[in-house]
Image 1 (cartoon, rainbow, N blue to C red):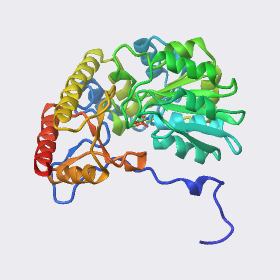
Image 2: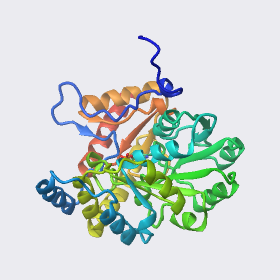
Image 3: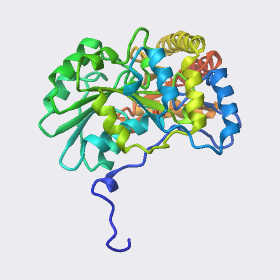
Amino acid sequence: MASQITPQPGIMDIDLYVGGASHLDGVANVLKLSSNENPLGPSPAAKEAFSRAVHDLHRYPSTDHAALRTAIGEVWSLDPARVICGVGSDEVLHLMCQAFAGPGDEVIHTEHGFALYRISTLAAGATPVEVPETDRMVDVDAILAAANEKTKLVFIANPANPTGTFLGADEVQRLADGLPAHCILVLDGAYAEYVDGYDGGLSLIEARENVVMTRTFSKIYGLGGMRVGWGYGPQFVIDVLTRIRGPFNMSSAALAAAEAAVRDADYFAKCQSENARWREWLSSALAALGVPSDTSTANFILARFGSEAEAVACNDALKAAGIIVRHPANYGFPQCLRITVGDESACRRIAHTVGQFKGQTT
Ligand SMILES: *Cc1c(COP(=O)(O)O)cnc(C)c1O
């Protein structure tokens, strides 16, 4: 290593983010179920909007994202002035850390929480604090016990990833009520749209000063490749984030595709109901084969095997069949496989392959 040039403290403690694998050596048509992508892809209207954007590639995009914020406001019945759009919800989570946490501050995430919370905390120079979960659920009392005068942010995903579990509105409210007044609760709603009747925490945000939510177009809207997410919260928080985001962070194609996607209510409803149907089918089929999972509220299930060795062996069997799922050992689940709910044929292939695997081993 050269010299006296050193990055800011904390940065070299960051482990690189590992995304879901997307290819297998020697397999041409892999079935990728490792990144919770929508098997149906985006709305046809979103693809059309993307194609139209080709005519204006020489123009700078909108800097205030007004058209997309207006569409989001109409669809979700919220104030568009308090929406911030980001390059994936990742960027919004990152901006939260950059704006509200720094050296000497603490940021809480839970035991099996999303890797990005720790990465963004360290990138801001703050200290990540990991809190235990109870039976693969966010534990409000454990978070409240860890919160102190240094705590600036608390991140929870609801539904959670990789567990798929859901924390009820009363518990989320109890958490928001119990945190110190200088601390913001960030509700990561990457999978919120999969939960029937859930507002992503909107009513809590409207009633309080210390709650922010993030949402994404990468999951139910099928636009992971476009990188669009958004955040919603108190006006002063959004104003702070807007000051530090890149003025042209969103491409014109991404803005156009997302706006069309959020306005396509019929396609959204279809994706929601297909996912619910095949999630139920897949979890029941695997449970019948002796592979249980918690009730998932998202677009994946966390299948639990008898041991790490069995999970690894089943993962190998799936790979041999051309199927990629996630082995979430780095999330504290070496004995599990996280399987994205695909379409009907994908779910049937999973059940078939796991069935064969179980037949060989028992
Ligand atoms: C997928 C996911 C996101 C979304 O990230 P984007 O940057 O919007 O693609 C955020 N949080 C969790 C927990 C996720 O699983």
